[in-house]
Length: 291
Image (cartoon, rainbow, N blue to C red):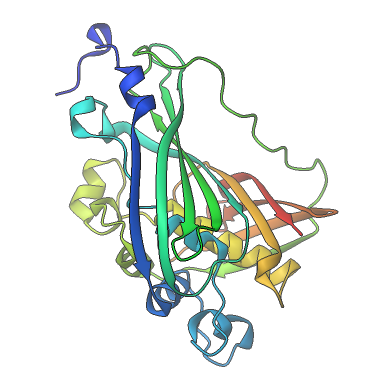
């Protein structure tokens, strides 16, 4: 049971910041291709631009697959007493040291980087960092950072400081855009990557959570945006993507069309994604760095 707002129990900040997790995960071309298909690639089997992500001959890995490798690194525990029913995925950041190999064993090291208490009634931000390395060589592949916004847990203590300032979208018309039609069953497919949250599959659970139907995983929308940027700015070499950051701003319902708007300034691509029919910004403050 979670304490009421006027009886919040202080968190054991030292224990949380000292937590470490080191696990290994072995993946194959199958997981890489399943991830790409779950983002909608391969719908047209004659599209060569998509085929390289869903066919083992010359297989390339979408950079945001790093979030799948890091998904099992969970540091928070039920005994922490946080109200996960009011948890939102606030931001996602990714830095790539090199293109991800299409198969291998990854070493996953996780820690809680920061806990920013915004105060009673304003929520608590917990930023978790995951370093992904290749076991065979020890080479670092990526750093994955996610921010969880615990809306009901402000006032329970933290490390101080403030959240990183969001990347500013340019104040001009976007340079280009890509529209992606999601499928009605896409959340059911994407959850096969490992995120079995019933919010994305069970209509009754979704209604209890305040939605009239299951919603699409935020990280699925994140991957879709990465594919849109890659198709536009590095169609022949997705390995040019070196970072990919975003703020989640609204849910997507499977079947909606997502329009990713993009601005280029040198090696920096700014982007945001909009649910076309509702004109709702679902991803905002996006920043992609290219080599």
